[in-house]
Image 1 (cartoon, rainbow, N blue to C red):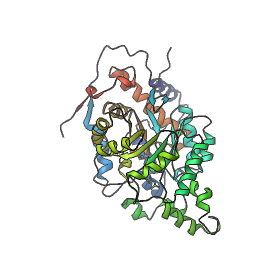
Image 2: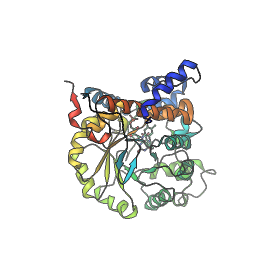
Image 3: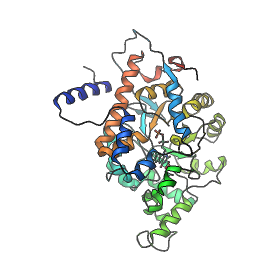
Image 4: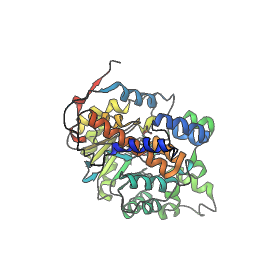
Length: 389
Ligand SMILES: Cc1cc2nc3c(=O)[nH]c(=O)nc-3n(C[C@H](O)[C@H](O)[C@H](O)COP(=O)(O)O)c2cc1C
Ligand SMILES: CC(C)CC(=O)C(=O)O
């Protein structure tokens, strides 16, 4: 019998009947509620939080919920294949774990535990620049599994070059350049808790182990942590950059480059003109511009502008397998998921992250089949209608 991702549901039922394994909730909203009860208010608030009044994070969910699937019947979906081609590689399913920094605030296993889960479930892991574990150690935890590197584009060219070199040596195939965080947004939840991990030196591991970063310090981060954190904050990102600056990254990264945080179709055109290979339509999970367009509302226009010049990925608000399906129907090739896996990690380490991936992919497989599709590539705009607002 063909093994399908959907079979996970019977594993859960059978385990439940024998009482063998206490499972995390399969509804990822319930998982978030459990995380809120079990994790500390600072760490939970940092992950759950968003910019300003939180309206963009809410809009992300509303824009996905407003789209409704129109299932088709009698289409032979017995043999299904969830794989998709993304920038020259075959992914086992249209899902990757988004770059999420500072994972040690969730669980001591931190990034290596999440990366191992991604590897075990066959989905790419995107290593964050703001990782609490040096990228070499994260890569080591993954064996040969697919990983991409997310760059926070430093003010210091030598640090950027050093990161690119290290990421390449650590086996990262795709460079994901995050454009929407040249400044940290106004985040009331973190302000009210006075909780910003970087000011405590968390999420600085890639910097604190980087020769080019260390060269700018008089003393080691161990001997003078304050100076090291201040250097991190001053270099972390650069609001002065413009489109022509991308030439520097194009010259110094041999593989595909994907720009994360694109919401306007004209920015997609500029990305293609700059020789980029893809974009992630994303508003950073509503964490940067309060009042920004919902990512799912931006997606069809960006996908149209991208045409066949760019591969379009999507994140911000994905919480169900049906959301994955909807994002594909709106024009994405694959999606990234952020907060849910951070909660899975916080609640149960590597198995918790695997649980989240398996839930999303089981439900995606079922949604695909029950909507009349045997593979992601046939999903399109005709599969959705939009509820009146
Ligand atoms: C705690 C946290 C840390 C994040 N760190 C990064 C990061 O280091 N780099 C980055 O490009 N995006 C980062 N993001 C944004 C995610 O990559 C992604 O865009 C977002 O979480 C998607 O929305 P979702 O959480 O609704 O799935 C972070 C998000 C969260 C929640
Ligand atoms: C600001 C970053 C270092 C982490 C991040 O992307 C986030 O908190 O959303």
